[in-house]
Length: 392
Image 1 (cartoon, one colour):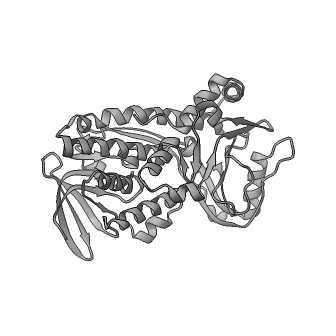
Image 2 (cartoon, one colour):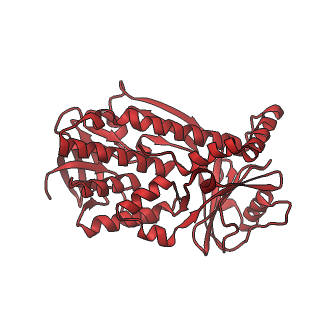
Image 3 (cartoon, helix red, strand yellow):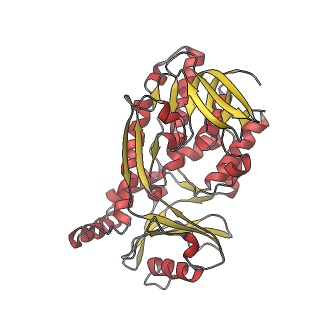
């Protein structure tokens, strides 16, 4: 094994893998280190709503073929409340669209792209630590196959998620963290059934929020608001369907299409931002620096935006001796991140049952929903944020 790379990337999620792919296209060598096995990485099921900008990047860099073939291109979403469904015409309003394509499928495509060019990815590593990040020759130490290794590099990209080692490696004196933990979670199920709707349905109900999404022509993803301490295994299929039907049925007789439930899980929800996203030669991207509640469908898209920006900055450094992009990375990335945080927070507050809300506040929620679906300006605001703001 070689002992030096221009860039060492910690984490083989969508951020780390896409960064490695982008750097390869720019002629910059990198290695990706991942604590999980490849099988675990490729089988961790997460939803995936891809913004227009994310779709464009995957297509332009040669990894979008399967997304175009198997993903579901959507030109709108529906907001359901009061027994009625209201369509937000994303493409009509913005000229842009979304694709529903699961995150683990994006990961499979990126791993295949790195394999095709013999890109370096090490899975199942342990005891990862970063060193000398305030020097021009930082290093990463880890254990693989029972042996301790140490790689020097020019830059470290921390793409290792909320619980990773990279963010804590930044001095506490320079880090500031902003967080909101929500008092509710999402109960998610995967169902063998045909699609119940051509587009995603976001439902606000007095019992709580529900989301109806498509995974494939035969597999559907559905969620409903729950207490984050719920244990998924204690819920019977009958009880799950009863809850989903109550929260989503409309006055026109529309009903969900049922089928065998083959996966159940409970997802906790938080908003989180760490600043700055860089210190010395260490740069953070994706969940290591920020997390959004899934209501706004921003998580993976924000990771993609981060590494798109970071890859361009590294290209300028290595090929044009220009450090401006690296110096300005955190400030530029955070502008887009805080917009996504606000949109996700706003969608979450508007669509979920808030147990501490007064009757007055409940009426304000309903009024806001009615305004969003009846005002073109309000619908446009939702639509342009949902399909994603420009990456530049």
